[in-house]
Length: 569
Image (spheres, rainbow, N blue to C red):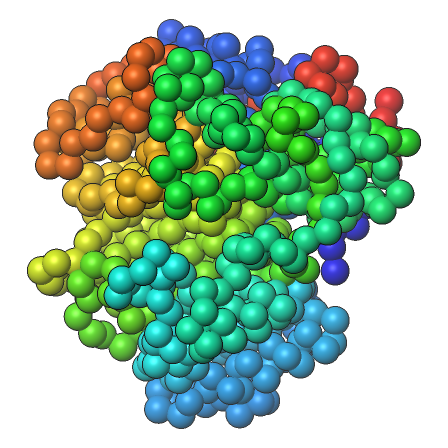
């Protein structure tokens, strides 16, 4: 079940409610240490050239309180036993299926250790899998995804394992996507990962859209008859022969225009750009969205709203530890799939108070949008990707997260990344993090408009990314209040790498180990402020400050509106 019109409009009220009102937090942010960038952003929050608007990132527009649902099943009633030896995966999956048949609800897992010999599949909307707390409930996973599903190859050839960047032992994905994906893997075919599949043949046009500017909340469609308030649709943008859409994602100008795009075959496979969004209101041919447009809409990109694979929505995992059987970390890109929690084709879903231990890859977002990961932790023998965000994942919020130092030395030929973003993923936020190892990993694939804020990092990881995936960064990457404990610059100080970017309030750093050069020639239009003074930055947290700022949502950047009982006034 999708979000109701009343709930959707109510969430829009929260954005507009603070317009024009100076709060205590605002007053503190306007101290002598306030960056010029923040003052500028306050004036143009939806169209600033360096800082993206991420005030609506996360489940239900970043709601502080995650949804709660009535308890409909206890896994013990379906045969689960907390003895650490009985395979409880079938019982847990039966309980989830029962909750789905009941129209949704909470499946409880009591304290104790439950062995699982299969993938836990949350594949129906409005189902919550809830333990007694990450320190009290443990799921002990004895097998990996290669054993359970099969070898997952790469569409790019070689012996690389797809479980190095996809799939989880707790896997939140709609039933249709799960079925097609596992069938493709077993058939040794490349699986459909995204909202419309790699062949892009699972979608149907709903209506073309008239040209509009980035930051607009309202668009004009040709035909609104197939749309309804509260529905999730895909905004779809195709590229043209000159790759002007990709250039626009980089801020435009001589550098992106001179860049060689045609040989970036991995990057071009990610296009069209697909952005899921709910419809807030329809007035004639005017359609108001729950978030402002992430990019301009130009005729040459054939902007349209389309259908998509039915989303997983309203589901979550809470209050447990997923511990994989401890095995050595595999050589780079040969992961067996001792993976943690993955959200795929999920919208308005969440993970809260969950720890993963001894995993190949920790928490993943694969074509997932508007989801929240809160109070998550990666610990144990070390991970390839503690967090990965790929295949066009947008508007997600990862907050209060921890990557612990590994409990043993890294085996040779392994790789450590960190908080990853790639594959045209945009408007994602990492906030209030404690990274005792790893880095701010871009895997190329032109991610843009992402924010890392209020994070302490021991910057000792390395980024990845195939050359055919194109640029490390698009426009509007922002790093704000970053404490670097080992003085390494790599991918944290980005004013010499990322176009139209902002690096504000980071420790003094220097280049060593992996050193990158900019992808684009000429002026990058980047900003560096309060360098060497993260403790002085006000506001301290860019995401929280955007939430507190509470700008009135604007129609085409000019005409303010607020919602009241579904009526704008």
